[in-house]
Length: 376
Image (tube, rainbow, N blue to C red; front, side, top):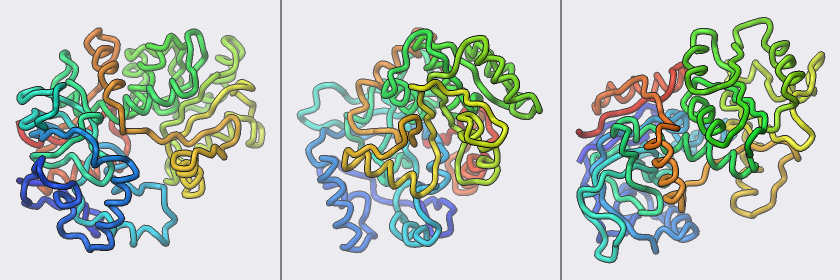
């Protein structure tokens, strides 16, 4: 089968490899070219996440949805620069991608929920990869795809929808709360606008002037453009009318200069010079990108259970294991017409097209999502 893998050159590479089997262990399937040392690390991780005791299915992938974390080769902003070369060696040869939609072609003998021919969507565990013609997937990472969405649209939905629902539900977003979405036209942001409306919130979204009408059509009550000298004046006027924001969902801020230059957190919480606080006393500023130190705190919260984040700020890290039930709810919202995902571009499954898709994703100026057609 063909698969896109990570390489040291930071460009993905299309290779031919043996297809996975339900009879083999996960490490044997996906890391045949790794050293024993790295394989032992994977075995330790899989045991901790209990991958060995899950039900599995084989899926023929139809489409794979591309995300910023894929384009940043998984490590993104999580590591200091000095450690990145070592991590590239660690993931070299691993299949790229997280999101997918595909057809089940084989199931465990004990599997009772799915059958051959079912069209499912979901995520692959990190470092195991979805951009391959056939993948072996744990059933608690998938659900039946939304009936009203195409396979391409379904492949673009899992990570961004899981992120928005988990972030809002973890922070008790309720009806009539005041929410601000930064980056309302992006892959995660345009879904977050809709999820906040599903929850009954009053939603203000920030985007560029060219995408204002698009974000308004998603259901945002107010759309403020960032390429305007009146950005913070307009936000202050909304706060004066509707009250301080209960949740600020920042899908833009990252270590990249083009994102960090806006300095949103400091300006919206009154910490920057000549700025006014826009966040309520019990509100939460949810950020999706951060510094290596902030990612360290996220790892401590995830694996040790100790929350060292400030009271009103969190670097949110999406959870994939046991997401099947939430994926089912997301599909129901799609089938009721309450949630949609916009696919702006679909790339072919060849090496040059895939590399172009990854470069396009890094630019982060695309409305909605980018998808790769694996097989259809």
